[in-house]
Length: 72
Image (cartoon, rainbow, N blue to C red; front, side, top):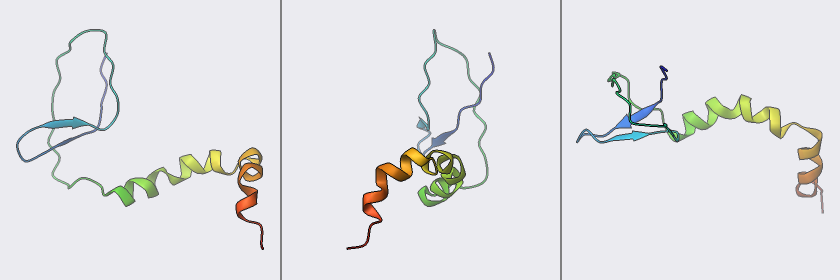
């Protein structure tokens, strides 16, 4: 199984995976250091917006949150 998982590596070389990873047993891994800086939290949010919009724009969601849009 070959799988790519995004991670951040700090100045001391500590690796932090950006998503949960469950493996049945220990595996070897290769680490590729990219030149670009990590994306900011705002950039991550903007990149995920189209995927989340599919859920947000459902009729059930609109009905559930409609009370917040009512005028006084």
